[in-house]
Amino acid sequence: MALPILSTQKAFLQEIWFNILTININRPKQEHIMSDAEALKKLAGEAACSYVKSGMNVGLGTGSTVKYTVLELGRRIKEEGLEIVGVPTSVATEELANEVGIPLVELGSIAGLDIVIDGTDEFDPQFQLIKGGGAALLREKIVAQQSASMVVVADGRKQVECLGAFGIPIEITPFSSDVTVRALEALLNCHVVLRSSEEQLILTDNGNCIADANIGATVDDPLLMEAQILNIAGVVQVGLFNDMCDVVVLANDGKVTTLVNPTGRL
Ligand code: 5RP
Image 1 (cartoon, rainbow, N blue to C red):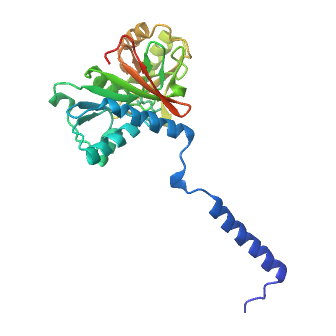
Image 2: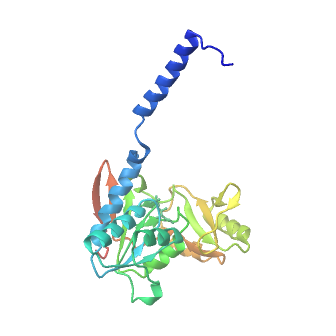
């Protein structure tokens, strides 16, 4: 037999029900929420698409900013008849490009790329970059080296006076990775850690490890540092991208600025 609800209990239950209703009515719908940082990434990622014209071979970078470039290029293919082929720099970008209908080709099957659009972790006043936050630096560098121009998409947090605070991501072989880490520590005089998640080593799309060199904002000669790091046998590639970036499409305070490298190709 059900027990009768007392009037105080009834009032209490009504209040809870009212609160649930109020909370649900006042809560903005999830799909409409975009943080300021995300809005800036979208702004930069989409604005960079103005460099892409029909007939171009386009390198497609990796990361949460250039994701918006890939989405926008997919939209232009569908809605505006843009004709391009793309070369992705990671499995993640390949999957996204396939989803949005960008025709993809092997880098070796074409004469070269007209442009690569990619994100960055830092860029300095000389347009030198640190990349590899998304562990895709090897493919990103291979693609960037085959491209006639490089446009970087970034928000204001990526602009620095001196490279290094982000750390330098370095792709290294799993074979004797500890030896390579020690050699990097001796060279750079800083702590170097193998990137992991939940105590599992992160492996790149190429089956390698990422060593992050916590060097601090001290990289005053990125070209020398790149050469020295590459000289260590276990190093596959380093996330210093020197003399590659022609333009940074920078989103800051709700607007986009295009920074053109005076010694660049665009
Ligand atoms: C991946 C990269 C990314 O381009 C870089 O980490 C920037 O990513 P995001 O736009 O997500 O900040 O180098 O290896």
